Length: 289
Ligand code: UTP
Image (cartoon, rainbow, N blue to C red; front, side):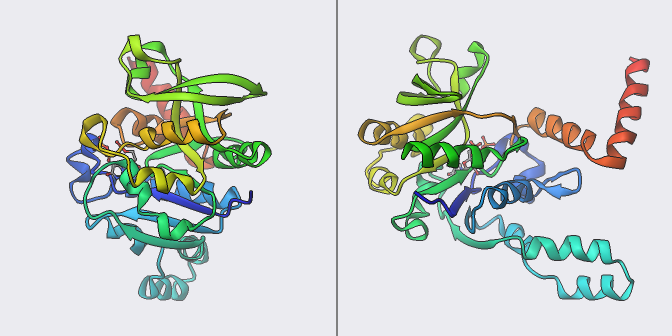
């Protein structure tokens, strides 16, 4: 099982970040000096992915522009001798083979993933949610790919969340398999406290076999009237092996204001000169509270 394709669903409406996301896709909001989507694509590339499909919509063409050449800007930078900036701009255009498909109606994550049917063909593929950014030593997608290949199974990324938080996520029924890897027996989407299987939540990364398309084709709208990927995964885990990887790393939901601010601060603190400046700035602020 060799995984060389990835799908990035990025066609959500981003209503939790309005009014900013009225005209700017949430995936294009900058975390320090790069848009959110670049972190996701870099994670895929660092995990060995060669071809990437981004699921977009009519309001998100800024994303495909960003990964294109910008001849006038590049020419200006070259003539001004701004080689560092020129390289940064060029790098984004040559980062990977990126394909785009539009989800014409916002009918849910399961519906968005189904748009990748022709792109994936019969191959297994990774899914990285376009607003879930990870900070990790080994890329989280790579951790999932390794487990999927080892066990010949689909994989979902998971971590334990606080018991009062699980109703915001999909809850997993699991049993231990090996270090940080569990067998998935069942799952449910946004469960009430009495219905949850565990506090292991699915968090933004998946490796799926093409069986998911056959299932999603017949998956009726579920929670919130949308076609839920979790409903498809629930069926998939009953008919084929699936593992949950308790990944090492920190996940940020940049589609929420708090998650976006946390990610901004944590990534800024990690970045050289800006990090040193921010540490001092926060230190001085803290003294004045
Ligand atoms: P989210 O629920 O986090 O994103 O979807 P959203 O729909 O933009 O959220 P609100 O409006 O702020 O509540 C999870 C992922 O699924 C994608 C989103 O872009 C995000 O990456 N998605 C969701 C789609 O691609 N299509 C959809 O119809 C729904």
